[in-house]
Image 1 (cartoon, one colour):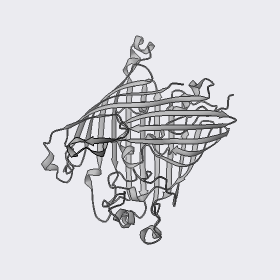
Image 2 (cartoon, helix red, strand yellow; image 1 turned 30 degrees about the vertical axis):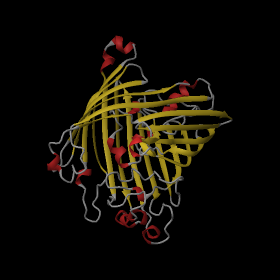
Image 3 (cartoon, one colour; image 1 turned 90 degrees about the horizontal axis):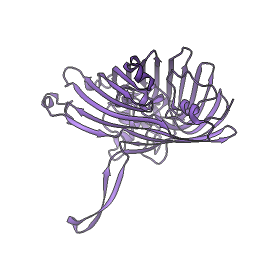
Length: 435
């Protein structure tokens, strides 16, 4: 058996010499291994283009004053949510490397302009908003199929969305909302990972820098906790992540994942007094997910629950009270958050022999999810608009396996005092390996 590992994946996992069942959902690295063909260099990527029309108000006070915005006009958006380039290389003797560069919402742009109306002064202007992120950069040593060590910037595979976030791994135009709201997405941090495969199991254990409680919010819980406005990732506190997947049943993948770490005081400069010295800010997340892909059906589901210790103390952290700091300041944060969701799609082209023979697919799907980043009251303050139920229905047309044309109608249901939020979205996505 060839024991070289051919890379890489948005999940930040590689595949060992044993391949997973082809009908079960697997990370992008699996297809890389199957298609690498003995080459040391792997180049791939994925991208999404989206158009959305939202039939509700986008005013900042639409939740604090819902009656005033009940009849506001809708709004539309063109977007490039993600454009990703993968590059991996196998050095031989079990050593390999992987990188992932992601452009979110088209990247960023800054330019200098000569302002004629201001006497020819030079001014720096932001041309467009977006993000460019190095989501993976790691070196790996593979000792055997069951023992691999990866060091560097890696994806944290907690939850379905982080573990399988490529656009062919969800039916909706945008990534599923629930996990995308309460957890970092894509969750990537610098650390060390031990992973491997044994029989029908794949496992991964990661040691990471802790999350930063300065970035926790009422509407996103720990979503921004892995990001840093600094030139480095602060590691005064630490965390660990674990994921186990089972492929025993053909066409079915079942996954369990979790995270534990401390978050209060994981900031710069380090405050040796007050809340930062007294409280740990324990973050604990548990997640279950599955994917079934057989008999022309694809069904995916997940359930996540999170706990944040000393949530009522976050408002007293120095970086949150200092209005000049680049962190969040006023909103309280919940002790608990949750997200559950399920989607199912059937390939209607499977019943048409000519289209089936041409490898074309048309999935008709439905999705339901429920989530709340502020699931428990802190200091008797409520944010009822964070409790969301959402359903979506639509189609995914795949003229070739690497390309998906998506269309969906979705309806976000809030509590009765708020206005519901319906929308229509159209998107095109690809996921492929070029070398």
